[in-house]
Length: 255
Image (tube, rainbow, N blue to C red):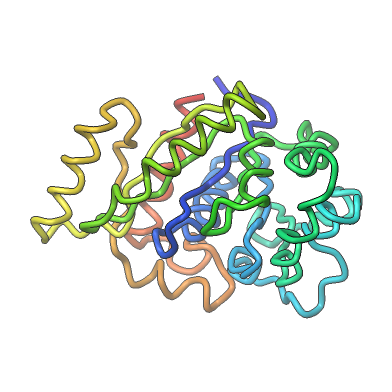
């Protein structure tokens, strides 16, 4: 069963775990499955924006304007050639962390903005910055669920407890319907014992939360953003593309 306008925050305060890669390619995979998809770039680095071929220097409006200046998010949406829409981000968004400090209802700015567009999409994904600041809190407050990418490395679980504590805090104080969508293991290399150990450890700690699909280390996945394309438009037959399609099917199946 699909839920119209399901909002998923892709979050982890650790950098380099595959948040943007997952946000872009899961969004593209859902679009390939015929879903109406909006990706909201909530990271000041704007990598999801450039990863979909959007020239940031040419943008007049971005998610910053919705968060700080009450701009209508419908006016910020850009349709891409890949079958999905995006609300882009630029470096200005870094200033939102400071500018939102004294704003009333600061944690609800994104929720309010997204409410006006939610019924146009089957899925809205939000690529969160690698921090637990105001922008990430806004995303978690606006979201129905949070998807957590975890890199298959020695320190995979480090910081996860802090993130889960933040999720719990948001549930208690800002968004009592927020739930964990699932944990997705990224940069998986089946040739190493370490990767298998990480998989087992994560499954032991979170037996019901880990997606069956593991995202492999894949050169094509690394290359695609520099061409401004999701993996399906760059190397549709690659293992990376197959993995994200499999993940998308799991997400849809989970409803």
